[in-house]
Structures are given as structure tokens and as C-alpha cells.
Length: 340
Ligand code: SAM
Image 1 (cartoon, protein in one colour):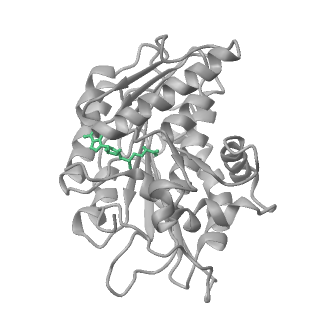
Image 2: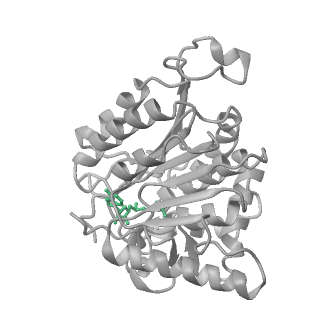
């Protein structure tokens, strides 16, 4: 089923969480000169217009990027993310929102490789066109080109399947973002199967999975299933901007599950997530949770000695103090697509 269009959801609270974490992961990889490969198994269109088209229909960005736009008290790491989005909007007006391929393209270096998968025939066209324009812009400025070289390859295909052939990456350094629509319940199963296979092929890679926190059983079970996949460690962070609605409708909560996370990420999240809760939370049901743990040590010696010690799961649920709340956008569309 291919009815999902990410444009309807661009810049919402779930995108803020996902892209903030993604930027942290890319910045961490950039600390070493050695090349790495970034794989986006579900790339979307790459870039979204907020002041027209799909995004303006439900204005979901009002639940995410909009409340952050004019604030001047952001924690440093979140400020970096906001500054990044603002470079796309040099007039100062919030007009464009970057998708994960654009975030990666802008932050990755010449020596790194982007491998993007997208199945939707219209989205792949827009994604390719967006990269063609970026390429032309770079060429006009005498800068490196991307699509014409080997740096960016856009695949019109199934990302769960396509990932297999790319692992392990030549430099043995890599980040994989898995961000399916979850319109069909099989996506939950495929995420787990895909990760199990990927970790066999490339045990030291970093894998980031976005998931919706919904009432449906597959969604509730997903994080626990991912925790049991053998890896060197995991980090799970969720952001709920409100309690569930009485009819259970709408996406108010989502998570990022990271396998083999950089050791710096948890501390950054502990600084930033309470701020996101304060600014994006809309009622007393808003909350965040950060938990981490280790399963089995496989594939490599962890770079920090303490990672060898099996430690219990650390979990910090924090509730909102926001009783009245910020206004949120008209309808909060569900990742399952029923609001589109
Ligand atoms: N990762 C993007 C971002 O953060 O900007 C958003 C991706 S969107 C949530 C999910 C995308 O996956 C949709 O564009 C959809 O067409 C595409 N898709 C669905 N199933 C797919 C599959 N099996 N392989 C590749 N793409 C798929």
C-alpha cells in the first residue's frame, strides 16, 4: 500500500525528534575522517514545503518545528538542529523543512556515501529532482557535485531488501535510518527482520529506527522486540506531546530506537528532551522516556571499557508539568495515514 505521503507530516513533533537524533548521529560520525556510508531505507521526498502543498493541509509543523522557531533559550544541541533548519530558510520565514536525505546530504563530507531508497513513484521523482537541483546549485558555485559522482545513489526500490546488498559498507563505518510509514502492520515485523539480518552482516553499524507509539499491539511490542536483538547496546527515546485522545486518534507520541548508539547520545538526550517536553507538550499527559541497555556484546570490542559490563536498563520517564498547554495543529495526522 503506497498512500502515505510524508509531506502531510513534515516538521511535526515526530520529525523534530527523528531529525534531531539523526543530526546527532551524523555529527558523531563526522568526528573521524574515515569515510562512512549512510543508508536511508525509506527516504521520502527529501525536502518539504511548509507554506503550501500537503504540509499546509493539517499544519502539523505547528506541533513541532513552529513552536521552536523563535525561541532563544534552546539547549546547545537543539539549537544546532534549529540553526540547520534555518539555513534552509534564509529569509527567516519558516518555508521549508528538511527530510532525512537532505539532512544527511548537507552534513556528510565528500568522502562519505549516501544510499537512499524510496518506493513511491511520485516521491522518488521529487527526491531525484530535489537532488538534481542541489547538484546544479553546487555546480554553479563551483562546489562538488553529488548525484553525478558516486556520493549519492537513489534507488527506486524496497529499502528493507536493498539494505542487504550494502552491508557491510566498504569502510566498515555506517549509519542506517529505518523510517517506514507503518501503514501496514507488516512494517513492524519487517523492521525487526531487517535489523536482525543487518546486524549479522554489519554488527558494528549504528541503526536508528523511528516508530509511532500507538495503541495497536504491534507498535507497543516493537521496542521490546528490538531490545532483544543481539547488539552492543541500544538507546530508546520517546516523546509524547499529549496523553492519548479519547478516540485514540492521531499521532501524539513517537520514538527513536538506536542500536549501537554513540556513547555521547544519551547525555545529550537527557539535556534536550526535558526542553522538548516543556515546549512541545500540550497537556498533563505529555511525557518523555529515555532508556538504554545492552544485550549481547557482538562483533567488536566496545570503545569504552565500561560498555563491556552488562548493565541493567536505565529508564527515566518524565511527565509534563504543562496542565493547560500550547495549542497544537488542527488535526494531528496518524502515521497510519487515516488522516490524509
Ligand atoms: N525518512 C524520511 C524523512 O525523515 O524525511 C521520511 C520517510 S516517510 C516516513 C516513509 C517513506 O517510505 C514514504 O515516502 C514511502 O513512500 C516510503 N516507503 C514505503 N515502503 C517502502 C519500502 N518498502 N521501501 C522504500 N520506501 C518505502
